[in-house]
Amino acid sequence: MGKDPLDLLGDLPDWPGSTPPKNRKTAKYSSKIAIDKYNGAKPVIYKINGVDRPMFSVGKLAKALGRKADTIRIWEHKGWIPRATYRTPPPRGEQLPGKVIKGRRLYSQEQVDFLIEALEKYDIHDTRSPDWVELRSHIQHNWPKA
Image (tube, rainbow, N blue to C red; front, top):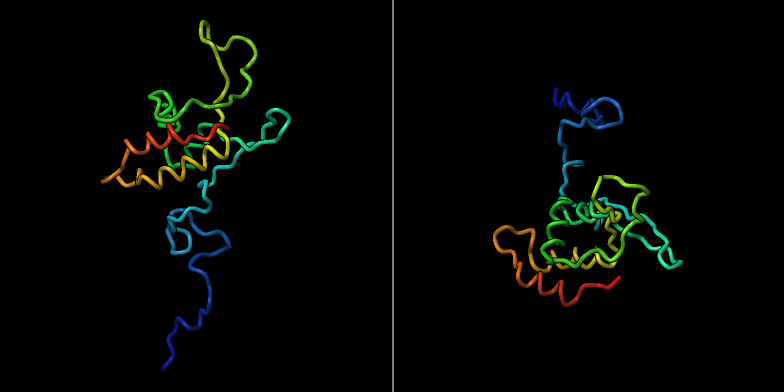
């Protein structure tokens, strides 16, 4: 009787089937590390001046930065980041009476990469010591044009 009875189960998983449960965290699935540098946000390819370019909408940019889309719009409205260089074509016809529809904001992959690096450089994710003044200055002077 020197053997542990659990050794008989071998390498069986903690759950039946091949799909792990969604309501239980395990060491394999609870990691906070991002899968990729864009946090799962995938760019959409748009043809700009005859060249295919990966572009991010406001929502995809927000996902890549770990923020909400409203936050990105506020940053743009306050002038903390420049206005979007590109937009999708506006929808045809009048959507809302008296409102001019411009199309969705689009940010280039270079602009998204720049923002990700800038937020990391100035510790914006650290709530104790973010450097907002230096971040805004850095963005104003070094923003990629396209």
